[in-house]
Image 1 (tube, rainbow, N blue to C red):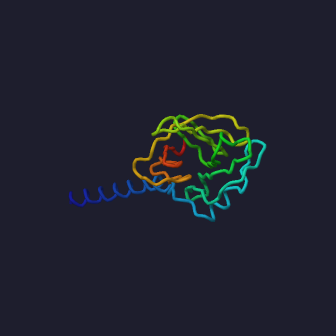
Image 2: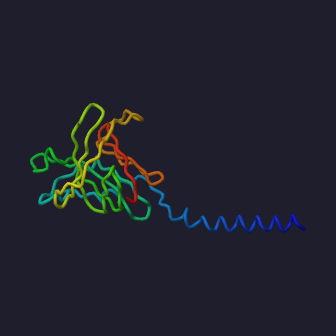
Image 3: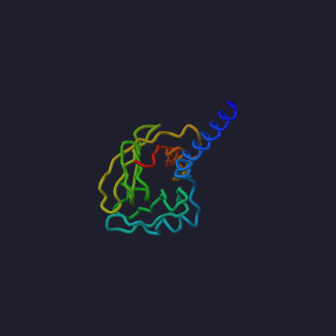
Length: 177
């Protein structure tokens, strides 16, 4: 009799635990790389930067999605002949709040550029695309896990933490700010 009561109690307790944790697991986004058709809908052929529309190089586009219609994406801009030349090199869109280093990025459009600080580090400066207002800098370090050089590679976050690779340099971001 005691064994049946204990067995029933453990069964009910297991069910309650499973039901209680299901919404937590279901609410977590399953991030993945964005497909080319998804990126084509998101990445503009000409990025609106301050008062200019700067051509983008779609073959360099990279992005991720939570599978529920929210994206983080970017692309290299062709800045030759524009006022952005030498200051910005990439157009960046986030539809989720992000934390990049100590920078809080709200959903919106940004541009970023970078300067080498030494052989192992670059300083990446983020700006609001609409105004050119600086929002902050983050250090990117040489990616020691891979020798691949990429114009831009945004990796899907795992546990809300992902990476952005520019050239051979990499920096972290966190979803949710």
